[in-house]
Every structure is written in C-alpha cells, then in structure tokens.
Image (cartoon, rainbow, N blue to C red; front, side, top):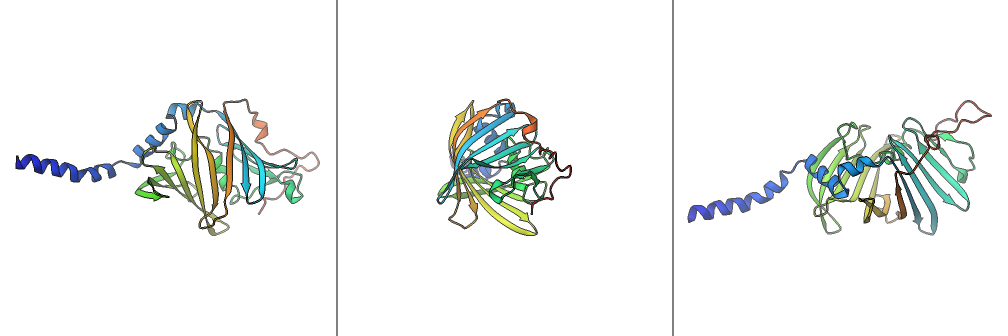
Length: 252
C-alpha cells in the first residue's frame, strides 16, 4: 500500500518535468498540425491576402501576394496610388509614389529583411533546419494571461524571432523580432488573433505590429485570403526601365 502511494506520488511530481521534456521539434510539429497539417501547408503554392491597414487616422488597403519559392509582393493602396514592395527570391525592390518616386528602385539589404521573412509562404518555423535557421524551446511564458510555449528562432541572417504558441491551441499569438538595421538592433512585437479556416488551414485575420514598448501599432484587418490562384512570376520581378538600363541605387 505504502509502495503504491509512493509510486503514485512520484508520477504526479514527474508530470511537470515530463511536460517540459517536449522538444522544440515536437512543439513546432504541433503548431503545424494546429494550423491544418504539414501536407495542407505545403500544398499552398500561391496566396493572396487582402486587408485594411490602419494606424491612428491613417487607413489604406493592403494586398500581399505570395508564390513559391520565396516570392512576395506587397501593395499599400491609398487615394489611387500604390506603394509596391516586392522580392523575387533574389532581388528586393520597391516603387514608392508617396515619396515622389515613380520608378522602381532597389531596397537595401537591411530594409528588405522583413519582406524576405514574409516571402516564406508557410513561415520560418516550418522546415527551419532546411532553411538554415536554428530553433530552441525556452519553456513557458505568458502573453496577456495566456500560457504559451516560447520558441527562440535564430534566422540564418542572425536576426532573432521569439514565437509564443498558445499552450492549448499551439497557434502563434505573438512574435517578438530582433533585427539589426544599419548596425543597431530594432525590436518589434506582432500580435496575431481571430484565427479562421481557409481551405482547411487556420490563418490569423487580426494582426497588430509595432515597436516594442510603444502603444502605436499598425493594425491589419484581413478581409480575404485566397489560396492557389494563378500568379505570374513577372509580378514579383523588378521592372526594367527602358530609358535606363542601370537600376537605381539601393534605398537606404
């Protein structure tokens, strides 16, 4: 009888340690499964997200197009003008009429970092080793009272992202980013919520992002997500100017 009680007590005491014994790969696998499963995630060849972006009194339409492998195009549309930022897997470029620039110009390596992360259609956690990243499970942390698994992901360019996965749903609810821009670290927080199903895959339909510690955030309210539509590679490539064979210098 006493021996049975001791065995039961030992099992109870070991439960927290057993929970902590989950590996980072197991947690990431559960995240993939929660989002719809690895097979479904990898079946997405193209994706278009349309949203409304707001910050204070600013309000505009936003469209992001993705295509495998590592192609992305983002348009912010206001009063008939569109700022375009794109990456074709090799070159990052933009057209910014709001700065009086109508011609395409290269984006500097530092300023292209967030764009290149967005080019990863299923996100950096999936197949992180193949992509040259390193992941580490840091245990549990809380986000606004929600218990989360915290994963540190060091990208191949040495920038760092901390993923907070809801301990119950395993979906991402917060990402903290540390990015070195022109020699200085910049810290950004991104909050994700209002997950909904699109073709069997869960996507966040409410996204807020801003500088860590600041109350000012850009809010993206997703209107629609369409998967596997026909997207031409040419829309991601930097246009060649007929009047000038040489591209503009990289934007600082």
